[in-house]
Structures are given as structure tokens and as C-alpha cells.
Length: 203
Figure 1 (spheres, rainbow, N blue to C red):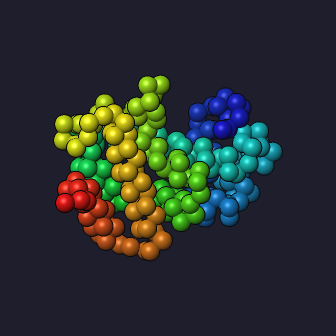
Figure 2 (figure 1 turned 135 degrees about the vertical axis):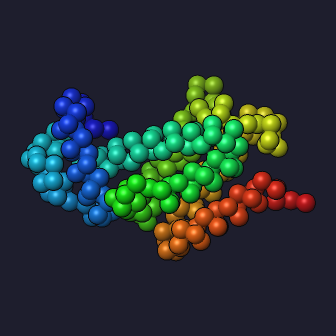
């Protein structure tokens, strides 16, 4: 997590620093990223950077977490629009993330992350779909899902369904970039797997 000095920055300066980090992490994967480029773009000294973050990885994972939180809100919106249909919502969300990303910078940021997956990146990505677990053990999006259209009997089974859907989405995103699939191919594959889940895998 960033240091307290980062959160105490004026909003404009904090936003400028975040944009500089995003620009660099969109250019190259985090392990190739240059702090020199970040501080030059943000107009701060190298020493100031270390007053705000422990290192470039600290900055990177903070930004990734923040993006995951925003995307999780977007996924919840899709659940509401599709009246709790988990499969329709995740398919629409998958399409939106691939096709309707607002600019090349965000697309490249996602691409660099998924071409260089670590356990931490996978964990953060799963938060996009799964959200966070409440004290009662249920994911915070569970209440938005229409359980009447799922072949489940318990909340525990619902958690497993969410985890399965999240894992499939993550694998498909990684495959999209590692195999250099077109958007159309990636979406076709994802829809096929979602339809198999909806129908069931056993006779």
C-alpha cells in the first residue's frame, strides 16, 4: 500500500502521479518499468516517489487494486441490468472489457498484466468478479445474483459457482493475449464455455 504521504497529497498532484504510473505500466510490464520515466512524467523528484511508495511494485499493485475495484462496480451494474443472471452479466462484462475499453493505455495496462501473470495479479483480477467476502462468508455480490435460475441449493454452492465463473473469465483473458486471439475469437470462446456451464456438463 502507498504511504500516508501519498494519500495526504493534494488531489491534483496525486492524480498526476497516478497517471504517470499508469502511462509507464501501460508501456511495459512492471518488471521493466522505469521509476525515472514515472518521476519525469509526474514532475517530481526520485526521492519524492519513495516518500509515496516503497517501490514501483507498490505503485503498480495499488493501481491494479484501484482498477479492480472500479471494474467490480461495473460488473455489479451488469448484474443489475441483467436482473441477476450471472451468465448474461459476465458475458456482457467480458465484452465490455475487451471491446469498449476507453483508450489504448488502459488496454495495454491490462495486456501487460495478463502477459506477465503472478499469483498476486491473479488474486487482484479475481476481485473484479468475486468482489470481497463479507463477515458472514458470502461475497458482497451474492445478493445481486438471481439464485432462482441457478441449479444450486446452498450459499456455499453459490460461492463455488462465482469462483468457477471468475476462474474461467481469468483464463480466457490470459488466453486472449498469450495466444493473440482476435476480440471476436476470444468472445466466441468465452460464450461457448459460459453456455456449457449453463447447460451442465453431465447427461
